[in-house]
Image (cartoon, rainbow, N blue to C red; front, side):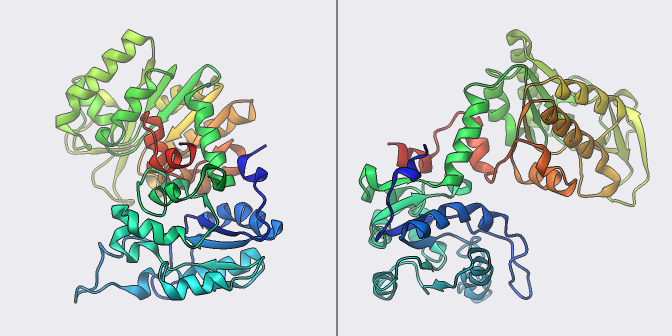
Length: 405
């Protein structure tokens, strides 16, 4: 039984940290993707069903980093008031709104909040104390609830006031993870601590520097590591291969060679592209051709993997029992360079159909799975990009440690 199921919320004011950092339409400010809101619903509904009142807090964007021209906060752009309508529709009940996340007026709204009702607090990041994790601010937040629930995995790697520091003001029996956080931790640990073998990690994206700590930690647990995307060219050039004008981190070539050596010493198979789709410019309308890596034209750039690589990668993935995917194989946002990423997504789905456990994490990988309508054919899609990466880097996330102790 989950920890939250053991808590009785009847008559309680429950302070829930959710992740409502959702995309908004630039003109109407309507929610354009409600995935994160939907992910929080089971926890909110549990509190309401038990007879508790839910006080929700979240951040939205980076308002103090994106000030208006006169140096003031752009409240209209970053207010969580824009989320109220969609949240009300999804919950099937009117959601109340507080114009601040602390202060006497907000405390009064919480005081008169009835059982079964929901109050959404204003953006916590309107206060600089939030990201600084200041205790005095955290204590003011803690006054709003009898119980604290953290259900914001996407922010669990931040030691901010509402995600981490506030928890110290609640006794162990009065703080817990929400259903989403529990699921995220459970599925990540399934891959990190007890993966069924063979375990294949697919790591893509633009830069080696963004993923190097993940790759180095995966060398301790994975059987196969598949490299794709722009980062693959740093590995290729480090091995003396021609890459034309493809993306490359020159200062990370020694790191790439070190990874390959460690992998060989530990018996881990590292797969790097054999062929690719090259283009004469970074554009969906560019001239393109498929070629082997060694025949890469000097003035062209690689933007996707090609058929030999797709076949090799797919074979490895389909023979795996555990699959982690973080990062695309190419510039899949452009249709001309989406085939490689789509093929890998299909291979992951096929492996899952055959009994493998698949974990998809990172904004681009999740976007790809959704773009190709394969969400129903993978085991778990994580809501946390940076948070999931830090878990796979072997780090302890402050938002998790604050609850677990």
